[in-house]
Amino acid sequence: MSNLQAIDYVPLAPALVAAIGAIAVLVADLVLPLRIRPAVLWLALAGAVGTLIASLALIGQRRGTFCTPATTLPGNVHVGQACSYELDGFTLFFLVLLSAAAVGTLLVTAAFARDATLPPGEYGFLLLASLTGALVLAGARDLITLLIGLETLTLPTYALVGLRRGSGRGAEAALKYLLVSVVASTFTLLGVAFTYGLTGTVHLGRINAALSARPDIRALPLAAAAVVLVLAGFAFKLAAVPFHWWAPDVYQGAPTPVATYLATVSKVGGAAGLLLVTVVAFPVYWRVWGWVLALVAVASMTLGNLVALRQRQAVRLLAWSSVAHSGYLLVPLGAVGMSGPDELGDAVAATLGYLAFYVAVNLGAFACVTAVGRAGGAGANAIDRYRGLATRSPALAAALAFFLFGLAGLPPTLAGLVAKVVVVRAALLGGAGWLAVAVAVNTVIGLAYYLRLAALPFRPAAGAAGAAGGAGAGAGAGAGAAGLAAELEPAVSGGDSGHAVPALAPSTRTPVALVAAIGLAVLVVLVVGVLPQLVLGGAVVPGR
Image (cartoon, rainbow, N blue to C red; front, side):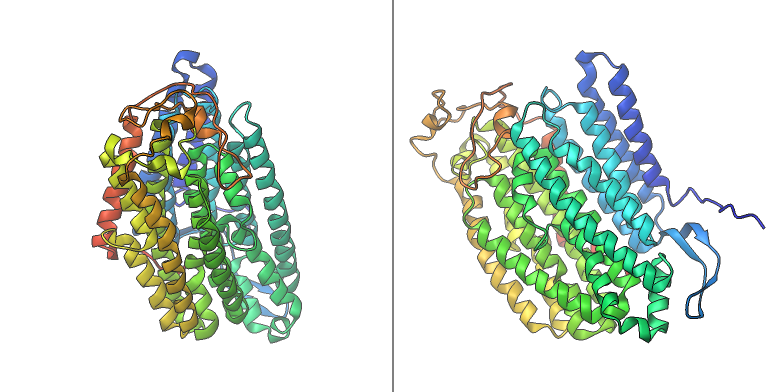
């Protein structure tokens, strides 16, 4: 009998398209003349669109690849066939969400195609390579594949954060990101080693079978420790407490499109991995990870919102907001620690639903911040410089307010409201009323900074606003045309002010690609707000 495994490439199609796109971008960057080299970003966008199309083409299919036959684990535990990569409703949900978020991120990036400090070839290659890892992670059903996907998702982002040439702050942010990531990965690898040593398998379903059939193993403190350690790496990707300190500095030190990617695609990948290890590998430990995630959720919500109140930089504010939303995201899973595994299906659906709503609204918010940064002059990332935006660009001001209302969970952005309702409902159904109260209290705290930023564009520009750029930019409608370097070079360590740099390419027009990104985000948020079943109907437990 041959030991060679039959490989089904169909479920791998989205990841293969992303990988081929990354290689195509790299080759095109090498052979194209310098004057048209920025066009490779459009090739990267085509690769992301191809990934989305390949994902949509798999709707309704259930397949697996890299499968191993039935076997017997230590302790005489018989298990059936297991596959390292599976395509089911859960995987498909993430394939579509990840691909769509990557398309939106690359549309935002196209506004930077002429920025000499952000090399388009390297950027497009690294982003698609990272996307490939995220797509592999979504379908992984063993710990090795899961780790490979996680590291392939993460490693290119170190380079993306520090990609801006000549930027000391970018290098500092990349180093901080790397150090925290290494610590989190070490914890995860240790947990994987403990899990394999206890169960004799790395396949997620077989780990669950071994733990369910061996109460002697379940009773060991080492087994519970393994669960917590494995979760650490995914808590880092979510920027959840205590693995959250990298997010504000990295988001602000990185180019804004990279911050957009980290807040959407990277966070979605972390959520996919966390759901897989909790729901597929360790459901018998629902008390352990349920209570851990409940405490992490409350800590993330509270700390993220309280620190966001003091921010005076838009990107940094959104970074702390991202920490808070990681807490909201974990509430349904945390409620399982009180309700038991019977509510696991509802908890997963609520988590996936909230994740999809959050990605759509957050991508739109980052796109608006990017547009404001291009049009507002030196120091435009400062929140006070948003005054008077409605006079210069009423549509952009309205779009920014729309997305901020969504992040706050307020109408007319129904998607944000539905997301909050879904999370609170999951907490109440799980018997975790105190978690629902924590969500409500933190939602009220979040209103303070979301509404403040949403209102600023509709207030008159300060009389001294022209002096802030040091170049005689007035408070009038056409004042302060910005260069990319001014928007891309904020302070990493400070929360209240950024250091302006000379403009590179003044522009008062918002690029068409950026307008398209904002418009598509508005459209998606409106559709999923009016028809939330489009998202919630596709939110299923792995294996279904």
